[in-house]
Image 1 (cartoon, rainbow, N blue to C red):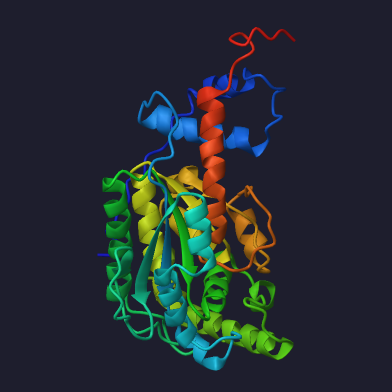
Image 2 (tube, rainbow, N blue to C red; image 1 turned 90 degrees about the vertical axis):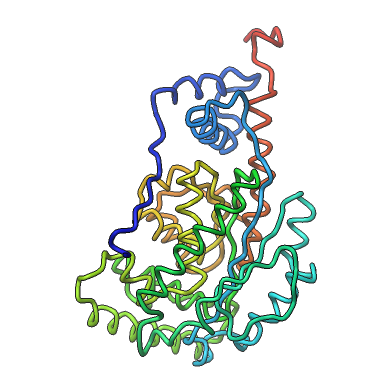
Length: 356
């Protein structure tokens, strides 16, 4: 089934790209003076005006989806916090007390929280809480594969379904965030395997671990990479094999959701390191998905810039963040609204009778 999965992500038509550029250049400003906002407006125009023939750019019912899951690798103490904190933070999200809640409320962005497989489920019904558990945390990737092929397939299809539900409700912008103790270790291993990096190149301090924890984290990533390379029999395509071998439940569901969003022409707002690794995998599966991605920020996690370089991404912000939760994505959504307003509403030299 995995080998047969297809994601028909459309290719954007570049024929009108010069027209969209001309529209932005003719606004009452020097060409290029609004920097990345101009690039963003043109990207949005290429999708929304070109693909859907809208009359104006829109940011409709934007949402940040936070995918939460636990990881067997966390049992080694590679984080400053124990694995139980994943569940505690999800409770905090549902109670409205986390940074992502503050950011979403302030910027009029909806929030969805998905349990992809924490150590234990929450008995905490909430309108924006989605339970799509693939297990009670992944296996320890330093010892064995993170999940089975069947679990991987279930996770990809689950992520697809989640995104499609929001798209059916009218969302055309989906931001991605994550929560999970140990997930920078997992994401670093997955990135290293994808791009042939060494463990000591990609291992970062995550939540702020000590030198001793960093050395342990690096050794565990190295062990996971060696095991994964040894066990690969070539039966599965690379992205699927590596997701099953080294991925997290949240990464898997994010990949499925990103592919579904791109397939339906929605903007994908990518948060920090872990979400960027999910984006890298999604683009490997369906290269056209890259056209629909907006990269919110550069985080302080060591390997994030390396992932961005692989994706040829130029993020909108650099705020020194290293929190996750989709906080960077929530901050980037107002920039989408601003880019749309520039394209839709800003006067041209002709309409404003400005002569230069």
